[in-house]
Length: 284
Image (cartoon, rainbow, N blue to C red; front, side, top):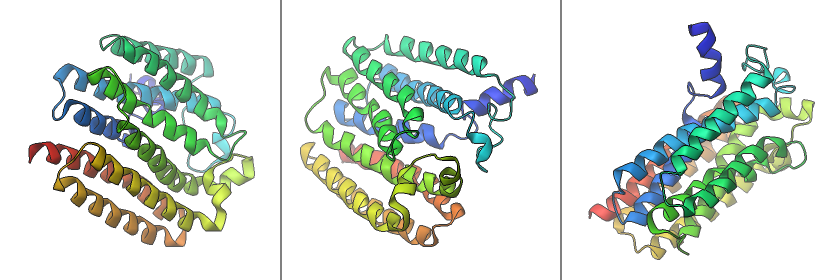
């Protein structure tokens, strides 16, 4: 049974939950902002489950799109589709099943959320194919990951407030940052097989460009704090995020695969800091 199930778990990246956390944490920030504190339990559970389900669906369709290229990349050559453990048809069936589960979860929320959910599905399906024709697949990934933010606001309030767009833009920029670190891991292999990414595009300027993106993200988060009149805890959080960004810049100074991957994974702590900053703002 383990030999049958394990490839499917790996295809959905359930053994590598970092991506799920990067989807979930901005959504949690949005839920707390929308509710002015702890959101209702059912909505919270739906978004937690939805993050796992839709991130898994995104991984499945990503590997389906990359099945002919993953074998040529050192980090991805042992993925289930690339090495033949799962057939393309089976992967598509799994993708459809996950999308159906995600749709059923959305149907338990306000009806207005459904339209936003369709947009999320389009972006998640489109993203894996963008790396064929643009150097900005990370931007599409950011839009897909950030789409949970308006969904969260709409689920609580019935609309997307103007101030919420600061969080949306900050999350898109954040994805550009951490997914560029992630793409740096594969940059040499991607160039060989013709895969495009911001890591390829930025080249030797990758660190100064990401530094600018980090400053822009902090500016958006600063505006978010003013838009929702957040407490002192939020401003302390932004200082902690800035320190963490400086550490990432130092860590990736050599642009080695190993340090870039560490920087990518540690962005989960950025998300945790932001969520705790919002939670603390409503407690004190």
